[in-house]
Image (cartoon, rainbow, N blue to C red; front, top):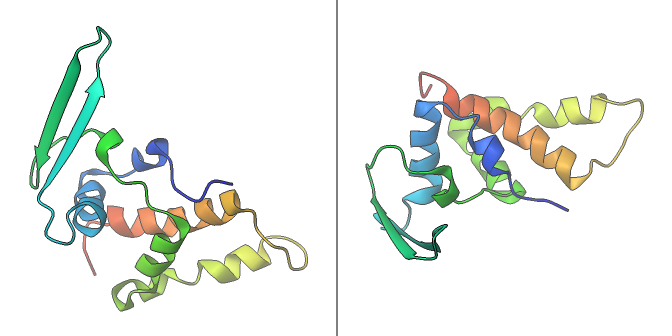
Length: 122
C-alpha cells in the first residue's frame, strides 16, 4: 500500500510547479535549508546543503506528499475547484467501488499536479 507519490511523479512538475511544491511542503515552519548526507559510488561520505531559493535541488531531497496532504491541499479554499475529482472516481466504474490506495493516490496527484503547474495562481 503506497500512500506517497513517487519521485517519478514529482518529475511531472514544471518549473513553476516545483517552486510551488517547495513553498508548500519543503520550506515550512521556518526551515530554510535541507541537509543531505549519503555515501557516493566510491565510498566517500558526501554532504549536500541546499538553501531556500536554490535552483535545481535534486528531486531526491523533496519530501514525498501523501494522500492526506494532497486532500488538505485540494481542500484549501484557494483550490476548491479541483475537489470535484471525487465525483469522477465514483462514476469511473459501473456501480460504487472502493479505490485502492494506489488509485486514490494517483487520482489525487493529477489535480494537485495540474494546479501546481498552472501559470497563474488563480
